[in-house]
Amino acid sequence: MTEEVGMTKLRVLLGDDQIGIEGSLYHRSFLRSYGHLADFEFSYNPEDFIKRAHEKKYDALITDLNWTEEELSKKEKTGFRILEAIRDCAPIRVLHTSDDTYMKMGFEHGATHCLEKNRSARLLEEILKGGERE
Image (cartoon, rainbow, N blue to C red; front, top):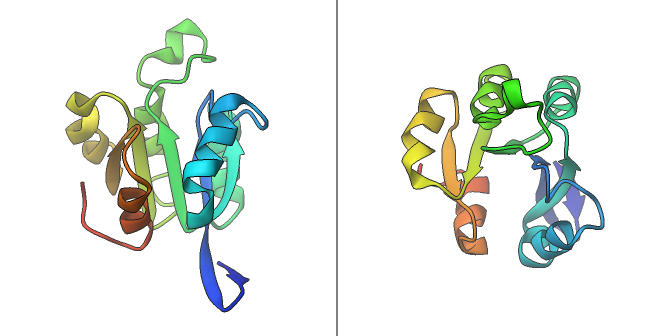
């Protein structure tokens, strides 16, 4: 955790093939909405995300369900594969998805929380502070 003007901010790695591209519209939009909640680092490549999750200490890891940059043989539900690979890397592991039918499966694959895309910053803040499973 990093110190910032008397308050502690969590260190969070977010993996997403759109939000993870620094400077992209999705990246800038995410930071406008959620950037105040934590010190975010980003990855747009699943293998890089897994590697970084194992190499560095993060308070939370957030992965998208579907990564479009994956080769077709691996593309389907990449987030589940990532959750399995990072199961022991951080106390908070969030599956970020726009499809609520996959939330239960996210928990089965190692997520501690599931978050629907376009939910309020308040809900992500609750998750990062150790709130209830959603």
